Image 1: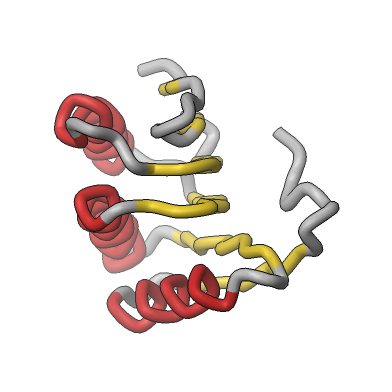
Image 2 (image 1 turned 180 degrees about the horizontal axis):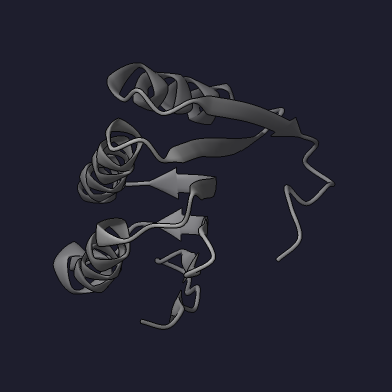
Length: 132
């Protein structure tokens, strides 16, 4: 299994899933047809979850996403939850702009739905959330 990479577009986020346990989703997630876009990422992560690293970190920094992408992100978090239930470590780093209270609240909602620890990381509009 190798790294999963999906370059960002105006409608889809950058996705980098590494076999070393670092998963990145960054950008906008409003694909017209979500199944082909998210399907490959979900399949890759499903395979990864069969034999994960001792620690898995999801770094999520989304400007905006639609309901269909929201469901796929939740699927990924549920799969991450299963990894934790099997005794592995995992966490979600949820990045949000200081000016985007809605995205912070969405992260809080996700954190409530899973048992994976969430770390909320606020940043200024001028700053980048994290370097890739």
